[in-house]
Length: 82
Image 1 (cartoon, one colour):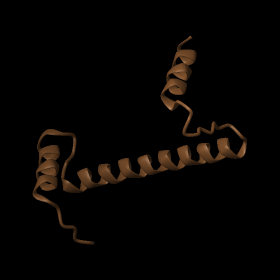
Image 2: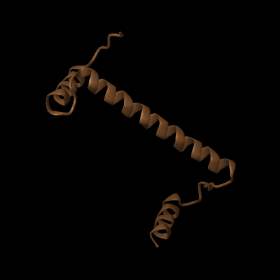
Image 3: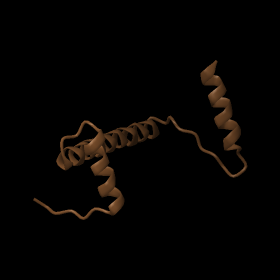
Image 4: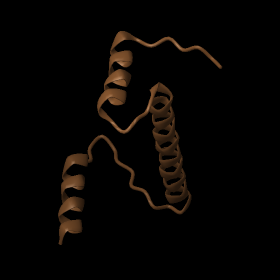
């Protein structure tokens, strides 16, 4: 097993989770954290792939210095709500 060094803040967080949460011990907290990290990374990879797919399919907008990105975003938001 690999030893890890925790900051006092991280140690306190883990101890609090064991004391008040659904975790039986430190290993459960670390395991839950690693699962969350894996889910987040998988989600990020999926979003990156979707972006790459959109670019490959030509579904993107280009903006120059003269373009007003804020106005574009507001208009798109209003269109989605309608």
